[in-house]
Image (cartoon, rainbow over all chains, first blue to last red; front, side, top):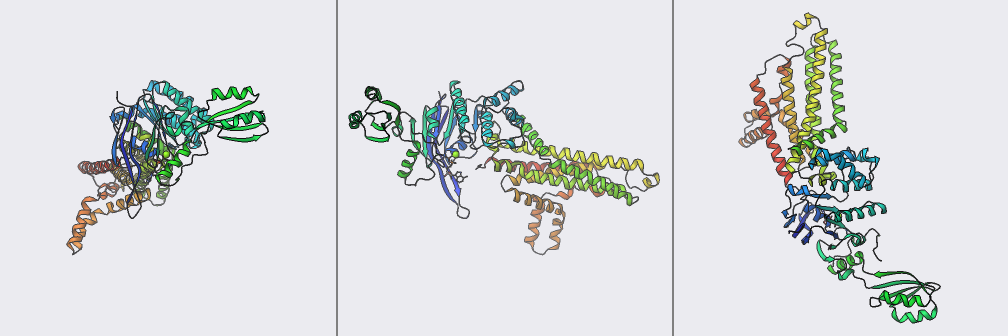
Length: 326
Length: 268
Ligand SMILES: Nc1ncnc2c1ncn2[C@@H]1O[C@H](COP(=O)(O)OP(=O)(O)O)[C@@H](O)[C@H]1O
Ligand SMILES: [Mg+2]
C-alpha cells in the first residue's frame, strides 16, 4: 500500500524585495509520509511553513523543488482532487451566496449526484452547527461561522484525505470541542486527516503522530508520547491538609516544595517517583491529594528552544496563550 | 465541461446579486425613453436619433459591464482567496478561466438582449403613432431588422473586450487591467488610422512600428456598423460573418494566453 500522503524534499522559495529580487526560503526540504487512516498533526509556530506546505499540496503554489503524492498520485492530478477535502487557513467564500448555496455550488463542482446533494448539504450544515442562518448571505456570518462552513465544504465529497489548515482558529471553546470530536469521527470512518496547528493541546487530544516544523524545517517527527521533547519530565502534585511532620518525610523525595497556603503545598517530583507509590503514602498521613499532573515541555517551550538553537531568534513563537502544560 | 457551466452560472448569479447590470440596464432603458421624448421635439429625425442613441447606449453600457466585471472576475477571487477552496475541487485552471468568461458573456448577452427589446419597443411604438407623411421621409423602416446586425457586432465586440479584461487581470492589478483594457478599446477603435500612419511619417522605424501595432491591436472599428444601419445602407451577411470570425479568433487567442498565464501562477 502506498502512503496516503507522501512528501519528498519539498522546498519553496518566495521571491521578496521589489527592486532587488531575492528569495526567502519558506519551506526547506520537507519530507513526510502519512499512512491511510492516520490523524496527523502538523505543528509549528506562526510562520513555520505550515500553510505553505498545504498550499503546495493543493497546487495553489508550485514547489521550487521536491515532489509530493496524494493517494499514490503526483499532486496536481485533477482527478485525485475528487477524493480530497481542503480547509484553507482563514477561509473566505463568496459573500453574495448563502451557506446553503455555497455548499450546493461546490457539491455540483464535485459531481455529487443531484439526488444526494440536498441531503448531504443539509446534513453537513447540521453537523457543523449552522442552523437557520444557512439561508443568510455569508457576508452576515462571523469568523467562527465561516470556519464551520469551511469545514462543511471540505467534507462534501466524503473525502478519503482531508487537509485542514488551522481548523480550530476563530472558534470558541465549544466550537473547538465540536471540531475535535468531528476529527475523531472522521478517523473512526477510516479517513486520513492532516491538520496544521500551532497549539500542542489540539494535537495531544487527536493525533497519533505529529511533525513539528520551525523556520521551514522539520524539527521533530513521531508519536507525541515518544518524542523525547514532549515526554513527562516529572510530576506536579498539589496536596492539602499536610501535617508538618508528613511534609518533612516527603521533602527529600521532592525536587521542589512550594507552600501555597496553610497545609497546602505544591510538590515537584522526579519521574522516578511513580504516582502509584507516593499517593498511598501521602493518603496514609491523612492529607488530601488535590491534583497530580505530568510536567512536560510545551510546544511553545519547544519552539523557543529550537528556534534559539537555530539562531533565528524567537520569531513569533508564541501561541495565542493556549498553554498545554498539564 | 459541466464544471465550466457551473462556474459560469455562478458568475451570472454574482453579477445579478451585485446589481451592477440591473442599474446599467435600467439606465439604458431610461436613456432610450428620454431619447424618445427628445425625438418629439425634432420632427422627422426621431427614428434616426433613437436608433443612434440605443446602439450607442448598448455599446457604452456593455463596455462598462465588460470592463468593470471583467477585471474583477479573476483578480477578486485571488485577492480575497476564495479561489483556494475552489481550485481544491476537481477543476483545472483553464476550466476556471473558461467558466468565468462564459459567465460574463452570458451576463452581457442578457443585457444586450434587454436593450434590443427596449429599442424595438420604442421604435415600434413610434412607427405606430407616426403619420404616413413622416414615415415616407425615413431612410429605413422604424423597427428595422437590420438593427440586429449592428447589435450582433456590438455583442461580439463586447465579448472581445471582456476577453481583454480577463486576460489582463490574470497578471496585473485590477486598476491597471481596467486602464489597459480601456486603452486598448480606444486604440482599437482608431486602429484604421494606424494603417494610414506610415504614409504620414518619414521614419521607417515608426512606420514599421505602426504596422506591427495595426496587426496586433484588435481592429474594433470593424465591429461598428451603426452608421450604415441607421442610414439604411446594406451590410452584407458575408461581412458580418467574417468580422465575427475575426472576433472569435482574437478571443480564442486571448483566452488561451490567459489560461496559460493563469495555470503557472502562484496564489499567495
Ligand atoms: N507570498 C509570500 N511571499 C513571501 N513570503 C511569504 C509568503 N507567504 C508566506 N511567506 C513567508 O513564509 C513563511 C512561512 O509562512 P506560512 O507557511 O504561512 O507559515 P505558517 O502557516 O506556519 O504560519 C513565513 O515566514 C512567511 O512570512
Ligand atoms: Mg498558517
